Length: 116
Image 1 (cartoon, one colour):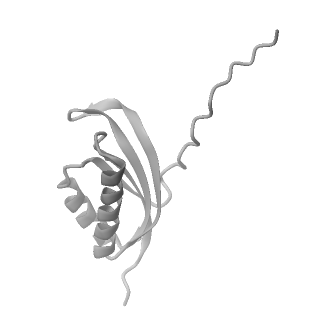
Image 2 (spheres, one colour):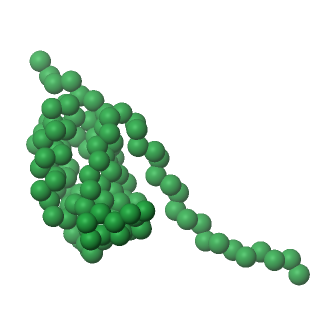
């Protein structure tokens, strides 16, 4: 009998000092951990570097990554445990269902329209 698969959303805050190459490696590593725990990553959204509203450890900003996952509930506990040991991950939050909001649209360039 196959394990019950549920939808999850994960928000990862990665070290702000990581290069694009290292962020890509971290996404691949997280995807591999999900797969090893019986799940699959259905979508990854890189939200870029953002300032946090409060410091986490020594970090006041971080690279935000949003993942949509399908995996059995037992895999989530193991995923939290394993990812907490990764030095490059500042914070990881996994929520069930579609609890994560849609990522915001990129900020539009501000134009100063003044009529003469």
